[in-house]
Image 1 (tube, rainbow, N blue to C red):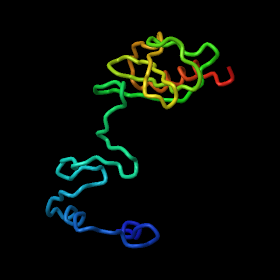
Image 2 (cartoon, one colour):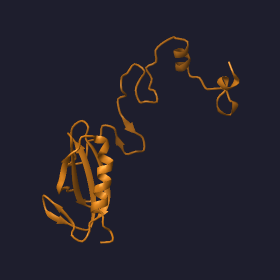
Image 3 (cartoon, one colour):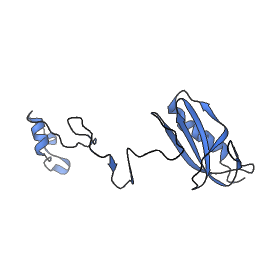
Image 4 (cartoon, rainbow, N blue to C red):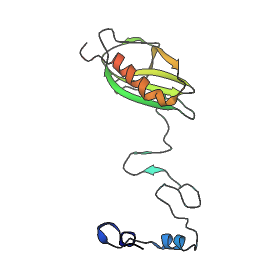
Amino acid sequence: MSEAAETGAGGTPPQTTDESAAAADGGGTSTGPTSAGMAVDGTPPASAEVPGAGMSADAAPPAGAPDGAGAQQRTSDITAGPGGVMTDEVGVVTGELTLRTEYADGQVTLRVQYKDADEWYGVTGGRVPLADPASLDAVHTIAVALLNRPEG
């Protein structure tokens, strides 16, 4: 064996735990967590908390967000132009807004809210089919470019 294989970074010997040694020599099965957040036997941990992130992987979507598998969304703060943004629920909204582009069930939907408000409004004409969910970033980028008019 070469020296590179026998030493770790900086020439120090690699660290070996009892679990990795047992697995290396074929003995025993570990049930402790791995770096992927699952136990070796395939059972998920009791909690999917992300330390310091203030949320967990099981967190519910925000109010008004799409439900179901494959639901995705992108958000950006924008400033509406002189004519504002027409919505289905309340008509024209103006000023500092947040734009959310949602993808669910083969459809993309644009929604806006007054910045830091609770209510979301559907952008009039802002719902279309989208065959490839990978295109969500491009659709969101275009929507931001069309609706963000900080200079008027």
